[in-house]
Image (tube, rainbow, N blue to C red; front, side, top):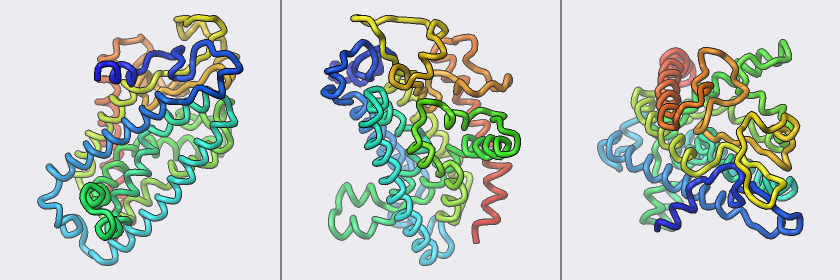
Length: 339
């Protein structure tokens, strides 16, 4: 068990299990991304199980009253949720599949990085939203039963909680893209990664969910309550802590025969931009504030604080901004969508 936990824990940007460190050309095609795959599976197992358990224990009276507890128009809302669930299912297959398949043609670093990147909160929102809207609930009851029935149970509150968890990020996407279309620059920087050399064209094509997650999820749930915000607190904390544990801040290949520990500032800009030698990850902002965000009042990692200090700064700010977005934007928007 100790060996497995040690292997699962991220070991820094140069370690071969992440795809970094020195590696000879003839070995690149034979070393599978084992650690990224295990990290991906561990992340989703913990997120799904912990979220559903907390939901069922704290946010619903009985498992058999899911729809009655949340919805007013049960039949129409259930049909709507099924359609959203089916749409998310196909979109997730396309997103996860296209990005992973493309990684086999983009070098070893991309092959390892893509599985880490699929654990971003915005991506898990899509997968768990698909489960939570209950489109496959009837199928699982008829043909599987047991644990599958529990996994595919309709939980619209979970879907809206994920919607709230990503709300501040999605709103900043709207601002960044709107200003970029007008002026050609990104005022916040959350979408600037789309212009990076390491960002493939398939990543750009499969990032549209940042623009429609909020309205689609509110439309599907036909409900938005304070419980959505309360459950979102757990979602943010779990994602950040898992990413801090499982994923390195970046992956870098060295030219030496042993690992080199270098300060971030010692790497040249050219090396940082070369996707075959360096890939920036920082999944769920678990290591530092996103490097393209330069707004002064948002800076929480410029002084290189200890990990626990940085995480505490990040989490309370993330929750505060989500709360302000929930009250100031999501609730008013929901009044226009819910009927």
